[in-house]
Length: 231
Image 1: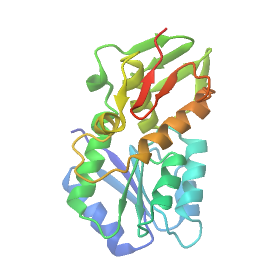
Image 2: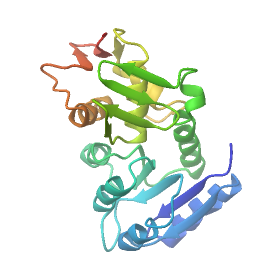
Image 3: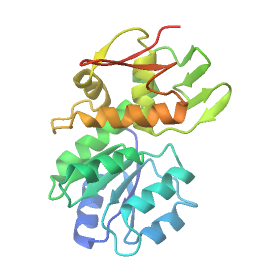
Image 4: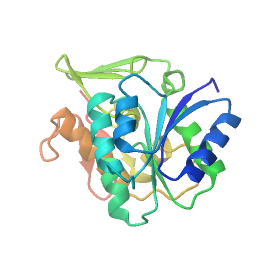
């Protein structure tokens, strides 16, 4: 895997240094910030390939940092670190556009493996030989990682892009939540809750202006999962 630039936003120096040690073992470059406000300032000129973001920061919490990141640089994958184990914290992070999360204490090797999984699923070369899908008034470009609806750009996260591309690549085919999660989280042995898919579908519908009751793109299939509506 080619060299990546990792931005670590973590106020615990021991954890930050541990993550940097393991990322550098992969041949990746890394930058550390211990404060949320400092991280946002760095991101004005630094454009990393992935951000590892602690949810509990001393000045500006990770939730607020993520909100600002998604306003400024929507395509950068964000990996949440959290000491909280409650489902609501994980769901909130996903709703705001986090691509994945891991709960402290964690295995650094597992963290690296899941970061690699994010890079793999965002690689257009493995998504499909086809690089652009045009269906209805939607255009999805896997090379540029761009989505347009009615000719206007739609800002979505990397994981939302992966989900949308997968569904749009198989119009009319019904997928259950497990199948969608397997596509979204390849090689991931950690339990990912079913509601994760629902949260990302909800985000996509909102951004695509696609109401659940009268959808144009993504349709819920009762007691099964979801499908992309055939043209």
